[in-house]
Amino acid sequence: MAFVTKARISLILLLCLVDRNGCERTGPFNPAEALVKAKNAAAGNLGPDVKTFNVLDYGAKANGKTDSSINFIRTFKAACNFRGNAMMVIPKGDFLIGPIIFQGPCFNPSSLIIQANGIVKAQADLSYFTGGADDTDWITFQSINGLILSGTGTFHGQGAEAWKYNDCAHKSHCVRLAANFKFNKVNDAIINGINSIDPKGFHIMVTVCQNFRLLNLKLQAPGDSPNTDGIHISKSSVVKIAHCVIGTGDDCVSMIHGSIDISVNKVICGPGHGFSVGSLGHYDDEADVNKIVVTNSSLTDTTNGVRIKTYKTDSPSKASSIFFTDLVMNRVKNPIIIDQEYGNSRSTQVT
Image 1 (cartoon, rainbow, N blue to C red):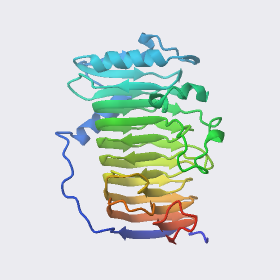
Image 2 (image 1 turned 120 degrees about the vertical axis):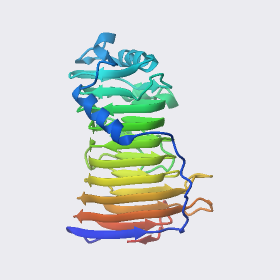
Image 3 (image 1 turned 60 degrees about the vertical axis):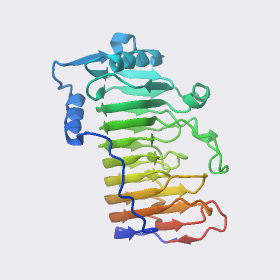
Image 4 (image 1 turned 30 degrees about the horizontal axis):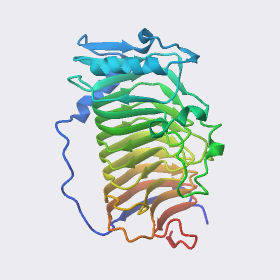
């Protein structure tokens, strides 16, 4: 397959021509106001009405050796249960934690803020992540309405030793390795400015979320690291991704079943597998995919550019109103792929 060098493409794909006008509204969320608060939180410039909860005050050790998982959880619980405006602080320093779940709901009158400026590392040993479904991922946020995670901090998944155990290239029903972040049932959220390095699995998973912004993120893993998708979205609506730099071993952004009203804007992708819709039709009763816009972005040294992949199935679900526009591709092996027999060795592709 020939490489495309410095090609600019403007592609509009309209599949099924089905339009859902009834995207759910999620209430009075003001993203502009929340972004200002996120930037102020990163700099520590918040008013006296915001109470801070520092992980050091709850016993966390910034030596990079002591497991501070329980201390992070205690800090979060205190901030989440506080009846006023609250900010959890992860200060500069090196922290080590295993898999943790930040469980809502929270009782703050405004979005719970987490200021992350330190370096947080995951336990490298996979045995920490085999306690059951809840322990699959590293840092999980669950059932929270109103969340701001902002700062210059780095979250290092220490995934290099785990990648050799990834067998998804050979098994369609493989065991997924731990994502650095999983956001499940988190609404009205902004994730801003943080860095994710070398996850065992995906960098960021967004599932069953609404009104979700991912801004100014830097996600990094080697180009040969298996199944390290940058941002993986499912069963979510009104998700905005902008001003991110993603270089990883799989899709920079992947959107699967139930992804509705997803915007990807000004994202730098590479290395990786490009921007992907699917795979779709892998499971019964999948929700439709609708209103996907990927624009004003670039891809360099990637395997693919833009891709839509579906299994050959009798599933009644639809993918519609998918737009790829104003993309710059530099040394991209497969600029455009539409594969409607994904997973079939005799797959038919349009490239």
